[in-house]
Length: 144
Image 1: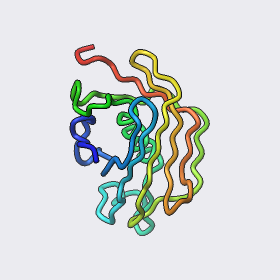
Image 2: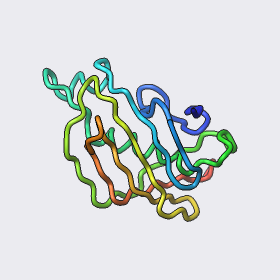
Image 3: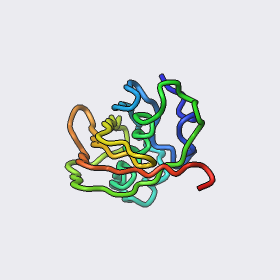
Image 4: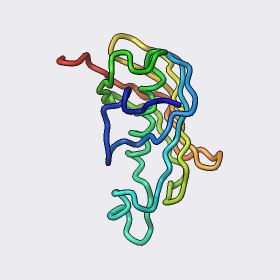
């Protein structure tokens, strides 16, 4: 649905959104990541019992947030860096393992200047695996 590279500056191995499936610009976005058996992080997390690191699920949700905040016409302004500024009330409730499709949702609650605040949730097969009540992303203007 959306050209990911026109919004996110991330590239392999740190691009953690495979597809954006729906979005309402300035409000919310939905997408997913297929978690393959060949992911780079499974080599060491954990050998013989691979689990996707929770911080990477959080990063995937933050990356999806860029699509919630992107203009209606994707590509206006080009890719823009975003950095996690703060997280409040996060709950990890189940592991994500090879073969899972990680469904992602980000809803903007406040957008002020370079800061976007929202709620985020990741799920597998309809079951919530990570829920964040407040995720703030800082997106500086280029050259700042």
